[in-house]
Length: 92
Image 1 (cartoon, rainbow, N blue to C red):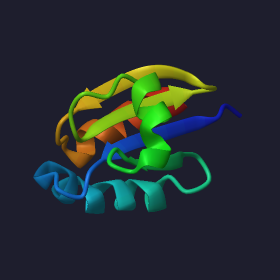
Image 2 (cartoon, rainbow, N blue to C red; image 1 turned 180 degrees about the vertical axis):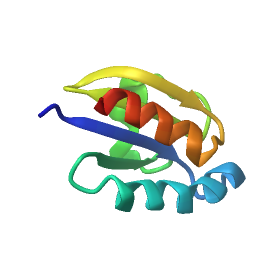
Image 3 (cartoon, rainbow, N blue to C red; image 1 turned 60 degrees about the vertical axis):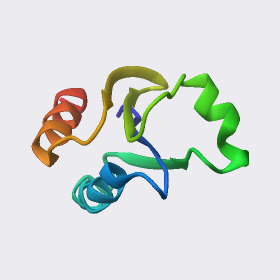
């Protein structure tokens, strides 16, 4: 089985991030055991190397990785269906 991860870059001051938080939480529950969700607060100094590695310039930004390789990227608020469809495609 492949390793699929949804990476969520967010910030406390980001309005769209606040809108997306419950959607990401729902996806994390619905895909439990099939998907790992990793969240990075872009304002946390401990996360700066990761923010730079992924060249994150706007929040929220989402990456879907399969076996460590980025296969999809989304910038800005997305519908739950958009993210779920992308996750399903990677999982299939």
